[in-house]
Length: 237
Image 1 (cartoon, rainbow, N blue to C red):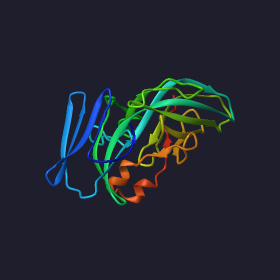
Image 2: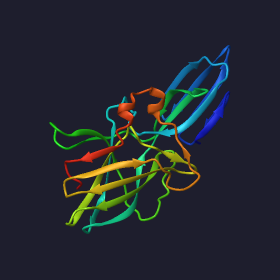
Image 3: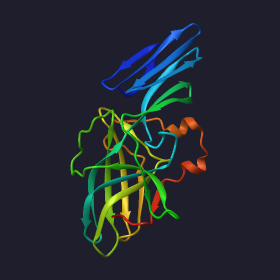
Image 4: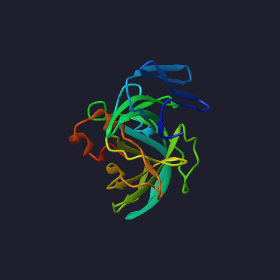
């Protein structure tokens, strides 16, 4: 489903279809997903299209830049760590490209976006909310709806910590794919209230293809891109 395509082309899946066909001197893009339908005209003499998973904070219209994953509580002993596997919601980006110039043509998802508030109304942040099961081996979710997050949790405090949520900054969120979509992350616990999270620039397994970040096509300022970690100050449970 994901990859590089030259058009005219067509991809038809169980829940959505994408096609680009010649129309005079231009091309017509058509995407259908559920009851939603998007059509656009593309003016390009040497067309290339990419269908990649993108950061799951683009729908409906960039409400937030934070992803919050809630899961069954994990109780971690002092000065220790563990690796778990979670899922995260997928959004699918369609890019057109000319050499190294990318244009984000369309973003859609089979997952209905849900939002929450992490922290207080005065000091908290709005998050894209996702509930996940916890597994000690990689799960096998629907690759058109969910990806897999390999998360290493380290408890650097001298006390036991119960953790049941992780919030991530999505402006730097390297996503990889092959037969599945996946990310690698880490969470460092400093206390029952404070933790630092980040998504790592490394695939969970060798040979996976890096996805094009939606941020790359939007030409956002580098000062935003360089913020790679998030400090959770409103609790981890």
